[in-house]
Amino acid sequence: MNSEFFKRIVSSIILIPITLFFLIKGGFFFNIFVIICFFITTYEWHNMSKNKSYNIYGILFLILSFYSIYLLRNSFEETYIYLLLVILICSLTDIGGYFFGKIFKGPKLTKISPKKTYSGMVGGYLLPIIFFYLILVFTDLFAKLEVSTSLFLFVFLISTTNQLGDILISFFKRVSKIKDTGKIIPGHGGLLDRIDGMIFAFPISYIIFLIENFTWNKK
Image (cartoon, rainbow, N blue to C red; front, side, top):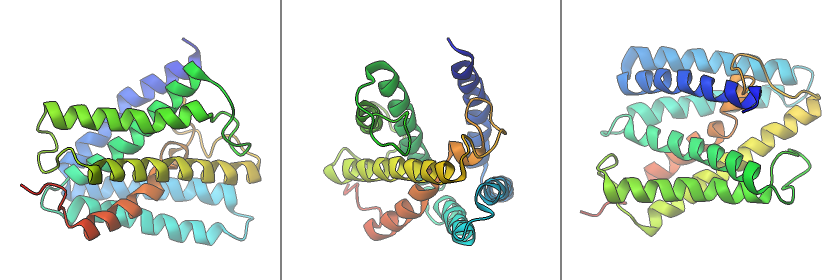
């Protein structure tokens, strides 16, 4: 096991319980957590793009993205479940992409992000779809949802958004000639490196939830 991979594992073991605590706790603690994450992410973006004309547009987008996190957590009767759903899809997309890419390798997906492969892209779709199928069939964690075409289209769309967001941030890093946006998370780099796809998935998912009006489960 190389040191970089070991750092990723240790960071995840620490970060996941912390994030889940604030996510489930909600209220004041969750809002403070989101605000802190917003300022860290904005700081990293500003450092990366401070001499670029698009700097302010990125900051405005981050305001929109983090506000959508607040809305996802506080606007719906199921409280944290819908936000957890989006985070899980994005995280499983990253994990599937990482491991499938490492195991199967193959042709590169884009020059913008040289480590990304077509096999990783496929893994990024497969893992969240398989995971949610098993969760919905064998548990009641997302009791309001059911196995349906609409749900899996949602998973596919959010996974796609996450992967495209990841590539877009990689493009900005490439333009700025940096490898990572920061060093706050060992094995990952900056916070923006870790949530690069999520910041695009949050606003999209909130809009979808509003349009669908939680009609995935017709029971």
